[in-house]
Every structure is written in structure tokens, then in C-alpha cells.
Length: 428
Ligand code: GUN
Ligand code: ZN
Image 1 (cartoon, rainbow, N blue to C red):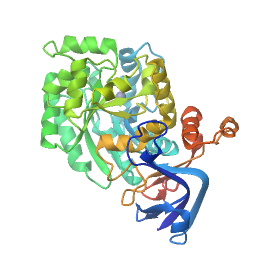
Image 2: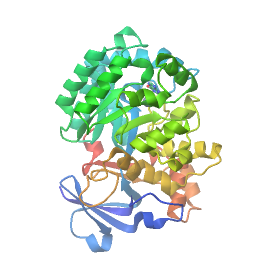
Image 3: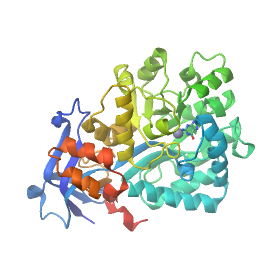
């Protein structure tokens, strides 16, 4: 059960201030991580820890905390790369019809297995996902997560209007089904339920009120939705909620803001909305591959940070086009380039690990390699392809290597993923 992983060990201690801020991280060139009973028992130099447990030698690869993906859609695995003009067409033409399939337990179970296979082969060990409006999808999702001993969050999508009838719940059934699912799954093993109203357009005021009531009943629970992704979406929201001051005000009115509330996209925000997000601790989740694919806009990372808004970074499968958090960071970099700003690789790797864990309020469990935390670990090879190996001949520093990983890497760079200390390919 006890084991020692040897390799180049990397974990973040705090947000790096710039690309030279090596004090923000722990990096051990010949390092060791000792795992016992699913937890990290010790981290240190190999010399200091050798002989304390049976060894697995991952040299010369990087040993890091597993990636965290705090916004994606379990039922959209087969939607990735669907041709559509923009968000609302993409939802109506491709996504809603696909989500209708998840009433079928066999289909839901098959896609759940594929979903977790994809997460793990891309080095992602925790995610927070939207399921569909059908409890069948939520049961399939959590059952598969539990089977693999993963720390996962998710919830039943609440949606009672502006979608096909077969996909709509009601304010009452959305509340009742969510509550029953919370009672079944929340807190079981490593699973956490997240209250999940899809977005303002697909919920009536009565349903948002029900979501707010749930959150008031379970104040420690996460809440996930979408905010200001696209101009047409914002206009329609304003028509549907004529009394709201702005998009964020819709959620605020129903008590849906707070430090465990995750707003997917959050691209087109007013100064008032930014200030309110900062004041309430509400998290803006950047989904770069999705924003580029759907032409939604360029996330204002540094403007939001300056306003004091907490942020996270995620794939948004299947508006997003890659399961890989490496590809996601690579595209996040390009979005900042288009804004004439620069996201340095120390900051981006912090973001995908400790940063996302901090946004979730889970750094005591995940996101670092600190002793006492859960042993969810990814092993990365920056020279995984011939093109990467060629490029790596010129790399001299850790920030350069991380930048190559996020610019050229994907699942081919993932050598191994450990979940609660076990090789995840053994539990697939
Ligand atoms: N807004 C409401 N639902 C969705 C969704 O499934 N994907 C994205 N990208 N935006 C949404
Ligand atoms: Zn989304």
C-alpha cells in the first residue's frame, strides 16, 4: 500500500507573482513523494526518503498534483466539435438534443465510463461537472466516480424553460430531485454535490428561487451556473428578467452568489458586476477553448484580478474542445496575448492545480503535494512527442519546460495518473 514515487517533484505554495518567483513553489530535482493509505505521507529529497517504501521511478518526468477541472459537462462528451454559429444555436441544435439521451441508464453508464477514462488519461483527478436534468445522469456520474475513488463534484442541471420539453424539469421537481440526489451522494466517499441551475435563460424565476432555497438549506454546498458568456445570451437574459440591474443581479436576487458559487465564462461584465463578484467571493471560471470555439469573447483575467475577483480555469467540455488542462492553459495564454497581456507558465500551472483547489475551498484535500493531502498525482513528460523532444533540447529552466508542456502538450504527455495513491489505469 505504501509507495515512494521518485522524480522531479513540483507543487505550488502560493500564487506566483511573476515568472521568476520560484519561492512560490516547491521544486525538487531528485525528489520523492511517499504515499500511504491514499494520502501523501511525506515529500522531500530522494536522498532523505529513500528506503522508506517500495519505489516507483518516474525520472526524468515531473511529478505534480493532478489537474482540477472545475467546469465541464458530463453529457457533452459526444458534442465536442459540433458546427454552430454561436452559443445559443449550439445549445439548441446540438447540445440539448444530445442531453436528452441521458434518461437511458445504459447510455448514461457508458458515457460516464468514457468520461472518467478521458479525465484520467488527461491527468485530471478532480472535476466539477454539470450532469443533465435527468437524475439518471447524476446517478451514473457519481457511481462511476465512486468506483474510481475520485474526488468529484457535480449536480443535476436545473432547467425549466427555453429548452425541449423532454429536457425540462419544473421548479418543484428540480428542487425535489436535487434534494434527493444530495441525500444520496453528497459527502459519500470523496463525492460532493453541487447545486446546478443551468443559466438564467433556462430557469424561471420560480426555479432560481428554488435553487436559492436549496443553497440556503445546504450553505456549504457548491453552486455552478453560467454568466455573461455571449452578447445574445446577455440580451435575452435582460428581456427575461426586465427588473434585474444586470446579468449578475439575476443570480444575486435569488441568493446564488458566494465563495462557493462558480460562474462559467464571466466574459462581458460591468464594473458593478465585477465589484459584486469580488465582494461576495464569487468565482469567475475561465473556459478558454470554449470561448474561442464558440467565439464568445476574450476573458479579462487581469482586469478581474485587479477588481479582486477570484478566478478558476476549466475545459468546459463540450463547448470546450479539449479534455486536456495543458491545452486549456495553452489557449488561455493565447487569449491573454490577444488582450496584450501575458499569462506566465508558473501562474498557469498554479491555476490548474492549487489555484483551482483554492477556488473550490479544497486545498486541505487536493491541488498540492503537501503531506496529509490526498494523493492525486499526475506524472508529465515534456518530451512526449518527437516535436516536443526536439523542442526540449533547447529548454534549460523549469518555467521554459512548463511553457512547452502547455504549448505543445496534451494526453500524450501524461505518463501516469494516480488517484488516492493508486495507478488510475488499474481501476479503469
Ligand atoms: N450556457 C448554458 N448552458 C451551457 C452549456 O452547456 N455550455 C456553455 N458553454 N454555455 C452554456
Ligand atoms: Zn458550461
